[in-house]
Amino acid sequence: MKRRLKIIDRILDALKDCQTFAIGGHMRPDGDCMGSQLAIAYALKGQGKKVSVWNQDPMPDKLAFLDSKNLLATPKVGKKFDCVIIPDCANYDRLGTISSCIEDRRLLINIDHHASNTRYGDINWVNARSASTGEQVYQLIKQAGWPITPLIANCLFTAISTDTGSFQYPTTRPTTYHAAAELVNKGADLARICNEVYQSYPLSRVRLQKHMYNNFKLTQNNQIAYFWIRKRDYVRAGAVPDESEGLIDNIRDIELVKVACFFEEIESEITRISLRSKVPAIDVSNIAMSFGGGGHHSAAGARIPGDPNSVQRKVLKAIKQAVLASNGAA
Image: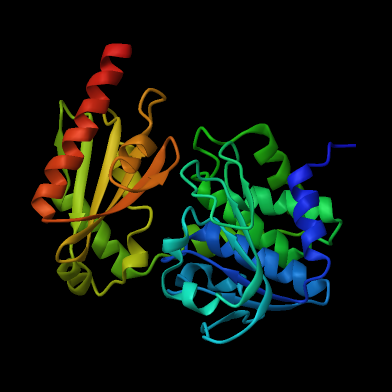
């Protein structure tokens, strides 16, 4: 029998007296965030609990199939909750506007796998070695002895698959494959997940991809690749910001590239950066943290205020320093 995790027992003990729950997620929710939120919600509803699922931003269209019970709702100020659970959110500010809707609560539980997590909960389960928050939620549901239904299996497989780059990132461990295998055994519909998440891109995203290929740049002897998407580029493509997810992987995969960076205009003086590394010697989470962000060894990001040109210079300088250091270590 596998060893029980004390932190999970602590969470389960705290949940015993709770009847009303809010499951919150970060701004611009991704597959790990939404999959983890909905899996927790389905599991709690299966135990007879009252559950609200809230996010500041809409669910990406490609993930809508996970919410077949229409659990995701518009946040409301003034509701009381016994417990609020926040999966996959490294700091409280990333909740955005829903933070004002979950203030009236008895308990806040923070479940996450980002090393930069600020431990903002009353109970914090932060495991930076976990490949995804979805894998942690899988452990939670298993240890609780709650049923893993096909709906939950779809949510958790999507969470794990998307946050491991389809099991390509170095954070993927044997436990990740074991969890994925059991989720398939429990009814995860791989054909549907692959079709919805990876094989049903709208034409507007293809236009963004065309923009990226036409405008990306290489520097530092082709070891760094980067590109910009500004608000006007989304308008020209007829796209929404969610559709840029994953574009960075296309330039990361260029043969000589060690680090890829995606600069995105959020406001005139707020730039969102996404970073990807494919070499063990470069930890992009350190770069992101130096700009107030965070993430993982191979995938990280930040929101940076200031003049966009200045932001680009500073970020590229930090990336170049990391690349030079890695070359020296090689």
